[in-house]
Image 1 (cartoon, rainbow, N blue to C red):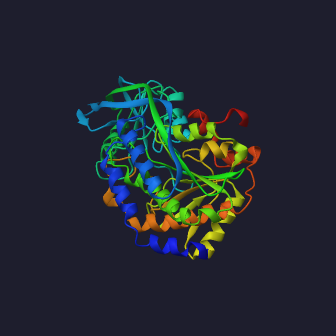
Image 2: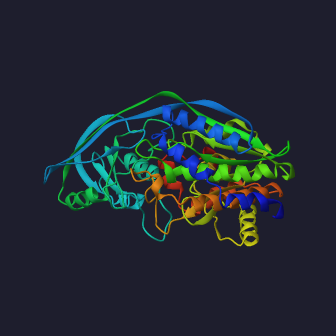
Length: 439
């Protein structure tokens, strides 16, 4: 760790992570396939070069780009009132007038207890304590699979903040869906018991477009390399400061540190800012398709890192990456909470699915769920850049640790069983995410 001392010392007072985050969030919308995302890619490429990353280039790929239009939501009975609403990405355009049914948290068990066919299903953004957090794609997919005509996603965070978030991975969804605030949800939960009738409408387009990954490399040319990732895109309703401006700023901070010791790394490191994560991990999928799995020793995905005080390392069942995180935590005398349970909702997923040992670096807000994320409130003022600098140091140390070891590959059967044990199978199948080879 001594060889990092000079670079880590400079990082404590470095104002470049904050300056980068300021430029990134000033762009506004960085929605996948948008002009703002393309502008952000150019900014990230310049920042990579400034951090000492070599061979920086941009690689474009095709996607189905979703464009938000207007959305409306009106209760028609037993009271008549209009509420603010946001269309959820990949919602098709259309209008639905039907009875509301409150599905609580929107778990499969709750939906199974209701008659949802032909109705508008209302579900919370949170899930019951004690179990895993169930993603909106699972809730939406299961409700529509049971015959729901439309879906209303209710934020559990107060503040008149309708949430957004993709319904599918990169394709138009089967039914219209909107997000509404917690305060609106209180009306809907109460009135659904009285057979409330509502009408929602969405104006949106899904058309062919292009996104891009930004990539470069550090360290020696080796048969195997590490991948260090973060997504730089964001939703179109906010600045995307926490999700995931902090993550890409953390990767830049780590890259700057690693560039100081690049000639001493035991493996090469490919640094990638991936596009269009928020609409289906599309940049990560493109990256996974373009690399040889056998040539990837491990993956570190910074999605959630840099936001809050303490770092969390999600190991996705990998004992090797868990041990690496524990060693770095002990040597650096900094807390890193290690969690082994897997999930398919961030950019490590295409690599985990292929058996590549991976870490997702997140951070602990002390709250359940996304907090300000995916709302208008995801803005730069919520960021403490001390977290970015500290997590950048820890990320660099983790990459160096993984570069010096041979992490065991993941066993597909064991991985599938871990997802089943975490009760993912039903929800992932509803969201069309369960791999065919896991049947």
